[in-house]
Every structure is written in C-alpha cells, then in structure tokens.
Length: 236
Image (tube, rainbow, N blue to C red; front, top):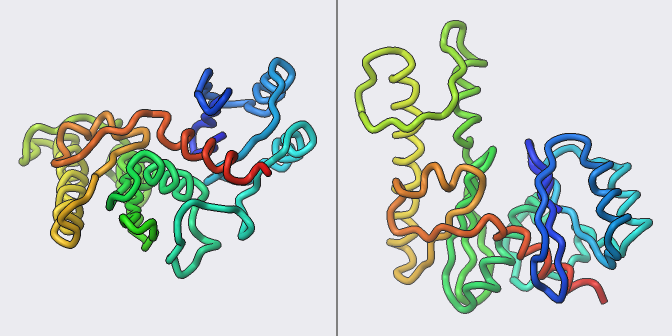
C-alpha cells in the first residue's frame, strides 16, 4: 500500500505479478479489511507519507506478515543519505523500483506528487540523495493561502509566457516555473552524469510529461513494484 496525502493506492500481487490495483480516497480501513477478507494475503507493506493510521497497521499486523519501514529493513541499494531515518518510505520504494528495472545504470527518479522529489541512484547501487520542492497543486494553494487577493485555481496548461489577467498570470508563473525547474535540474544532473536515465512518476507526471526534456514516463505501478520487491527481500 502507498498512502499519500490524498489517496491510498493498493496493489495485490501473486507470484510477483500485479493482478489487481485499487485507489481509495476515504474510509480505506474498511476497504482494506474487505480485501483481506476476500483474499489470502500472506505479506503486506505500507509506504506512508501521511499521518500514521494505527488501526490499519494493527489490522495488517494481525492478519498478515507486515514488513515495516525501519532501520532493519533490507534494501537493494547502499544508502548514503546522511539522515537515513528521515528518508521517506515512498522514496525508498521508488529507488528500489528504479534499481530493479534499470540495474547498473545511473537513474534520476522524479516523483511529481504533492511534493516534487528528485532521487539519484548511481550505477554502483549507491543512493546519494536528491532534492524536494513544492508540487504543482501545493504551489497553487500557497498563492491563495499566503496572499489576501489571489484566487485558488485548478492547474491548467499555460502555452503562453505573458498572462493578460490575474488567472493567466498565476497559470503562467506556476506552470512555466515548474517546467523551468525540472528542465534545469535535469540538465544539471545530465552534465554531472553523462549516462543517466530520467524517470518521471507520480500523479502530475502525465500532465507535465510532454514538457519535460529527455525523460521516460514511468507506469503508475512504478512505486507498487518497488514495494513488492521490498516484501520479497524481507519476508524471510
């Protein structure tokens, strides 16, 4: 399970193949309990960037072998992050998925979700770190939250540089700003690592993909595949 800031995404695997996928917005405890009642689930793992749901964790712990994100978790990479305990569960899963799908290569994983995260895994399996910046919707919300007069808008494509009114100016500033950030950082990473794969994933990746240079669009299952591999690595 991948518990984000807006959705819980669950993947049901059999023989390491994803057989079912679920998206739950609300009341996901009941939905997960129904899944456990319907299938013989042997192991589980939860990537959680939201507030911990103790009731859900207790359910999984009692009904399955729950693989926990802690310092004892086996990972398939060498973690060079200085504050290992603060590395998000989702980032660990994404790094794992990238390493499994692109072994022996330098890979930059860009996750376009509530936040934008950049994570670099090197060809020698060393994870060295990355960056975090505000995501697309967070940028819209911040303009509305921290000003008196700017409206809260839904993300909208801005095929122009100069906004002719306030709404157009907000769209231009946010969309062109985020595209500029992404393309600039990709260029920086490529200048430091001549051979590097650029992977885009996350909820806003489809919206921004065609505007990002030299990138590969990852499937929506990218993180779940990483979680499943972590189960396989740790279940014994």
